Length: 320
Ligand code: XIL
Image 1 (tube, rainbow, N blue to C red):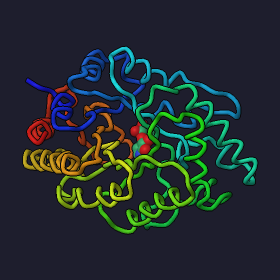
Image 2 (image 1 turned 90 degrees about the horizontal axis):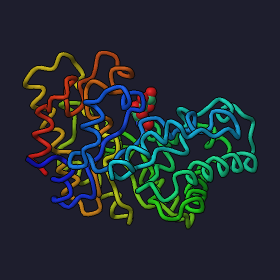
Image 3 (image 1 turned 180 degrees about the vertical axis):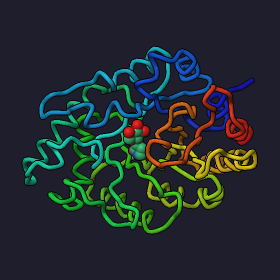
Image 4 (image 1 turned 120 degrees about the vertical axis):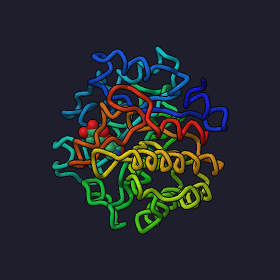
């Protein structure tokens, strides 16, 4: 029977993908086998390996060991690659976040970083998350070293630097909680316009999709918010989808609800021309960032800890 990437491609998407957890791939054969099945996952994204703290922990010292795990796995299996991420306040080494910079010196640091990291993966990435999480949950510009030095000029600057480093990859803005179509979404729409009006290139907006069982918007609500971005001329994708139970253990009713929520998200992507694909933020409850970050919550993914397909898997496969 058909698997998720096959079904997604048949339904008109470019891919159904997953994040790769760098620590798991070499120690867990079952994990590697499912992750590497191109019928199931057509595209991979490194969970942590391409972030600033991994790629340039000290100034001028580049390290691609962790990022290459995902890039090499994708190459070996014939899978696509999403690349994540360049300009972000988190997992940003202290030498950047607490340096004393002016526009000139910080631009030079950003250029060196972007040139080296994008240069290393040049030609391999379907898309790059150039800027990640630039808006806070109240819809204000998120305070970070880049905003403090450049105000919002760091947004077009980042996209310009990225275009120069790899002209052939799609350049994305990526964020969470855009799905609820509130103040944060308004600000993200403004972000796209700021970049466009500055004459800088932006190709896509990534909806991370870190959602909660029972509080996930409807398919129609989700399609409406996706269209706010496609109408600006950019593509969209769900880039880090997981739908967590806020209370554990999940009842069987809650597992079915989780499946319905997943179907709404994937269905909304099918409803919107310009929504290109869906990536889950890891695929098994055995390896998920949720319990590490949201205490007491979890079981957010489509396979259980023993690599059995959950109702969420079936529910996605039926909507595709
Ligand atoms: C998370 C990873 O999954 C964790 O392993 C890590 O400890 C923290 O970052 N938004 C993003 C992702 O863009 O990079 C984050 O990934 C989850 C939230």
